[in-house]
Length: 73
Image (cartoon, rainbow, N blue to C red):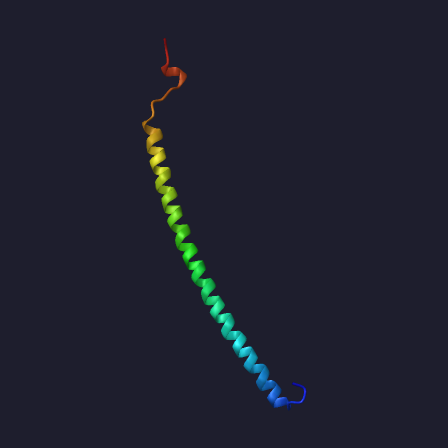
């Protein structure tokens, strides 16, 4: 590369930078897709957890109260 004139050196460097930029854009797009998928999965799991908690709370409300005040002889 040292035997190239300065314009050719700059051109070669710019070409390499453009290729690297395109690679980084593709990588970023793939990572963004993964983030989007994980966000969707997280939101779904949060919703399922909330529904499960509601069902457990409803079941707990249906259990009889076994406090000492109600167990008079």
